[in-house]
Amino acid sequence: MVMAMAAFSLEDMFIKATADVVPVGEILMLFGFGGTLAFIAMTLSRGQAIFHPKILSQPVLLRIVFEVIGRLFYTLAIVFTPLSSASAILQATPLVVVMGAALFLGERVGWQRWCAISMGFMGVLVIIRPGLESFEISSLLAIIGMLGFAGRDLATRAASPVLSHLQLSIYGFFILIPTGLFMLIFNIGPDNNGLLNQDFIWPDMMSNLQILAATTFGVMAYYWLTIAMRNGDVSVVAPFRYTRIVFALILGATIFGERPDNVTLLGIVIIVASGLYTLLRNKRASAKC
Image (tube, rainbow, N blue to C red; front, side, top):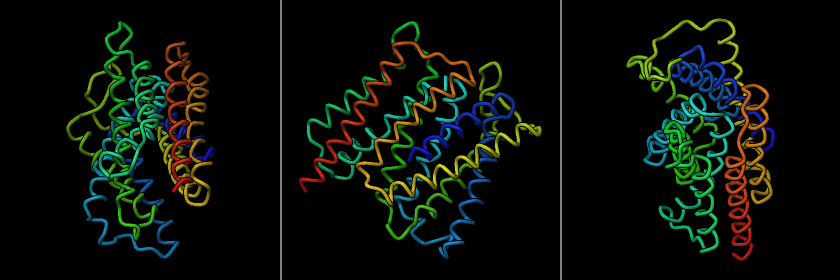
C-alpha cells in the first residue's frame, strides 16, 4: 500500500510537470492509451477475457462515468492548484465512500462515523477556506475529482464479482482516450494564462518521457493497490493510504517549491484523523459482526 501511494504521488508529479507544456486532454489521451495496453497485457497473461458481458451492466457503466469525472477534475486540480492541497482533499475519498455506502448501498453507519465524516468535510473546508480572501475557485476542482473517485469506488463495490480488478481497470483507462480527444477537439484545458483553451501539440522528448513515467507509475500503483487490498487485512492495510499525503508534501516542496501554510496543514491533520477514526470504527463494527 505504501508503494502504491508513493507511485500515485509520482504519477501526479509527472502529470503536473508535463501540463506546463502539453495540453491536459492530450495527457489524458496518451495516459489512457498506455494504461489500457498495460492492463490488457496483464489481463491476457492471467487467461482472462478482455471483454465480458457484465462490462455493460449499470454499475460498471456508472464506474466509467465516475472515473472520467474523477480523473478529469483531479488532473485539472493538480495543474491549477498545489499538489499537496489537491492530494490532501483527495484523502477525504474514503469518508465519502462510507457515506455513500450508507446512503445508496444500505450499509449501516453509526453516529460516531457520521461525526468523523462531518469532521473530515470540515478539514476540506479548512483547506479551501470558502468565503475568505485566500479562497481560490480552482480548489473546487479537487473536490469534484474526489467525489468522482468516491463514486468510482462505490460503483466498483456494486459491480459483479465475476469481473476482475484488471478487467475493470482496462475500461477505466480506456475511457480516458475519448475523454482526452474530446477535450482536444473542443480546445478544453488550461493554458499558461489559466484559460480553458488548448490545441494539440507534438510532445517533445522530455514530455514523452514524463507521460511514459506517469503512465508506468499509475499502472504500478493500481496493481500494488489491488495486491494490498486483496491479500492483506483491510483494517491494517487501509490506513496506509494516508501516506500519499506525506509523499505529496515532499514532492510538492522539493519539485514545485510548495510551502503549505499552517491552516492547510491543520486541514490535512483533520482529514487524516477523521479517516483513521472511521477505519477504526469499521474494524470494530466488523469484529462485532
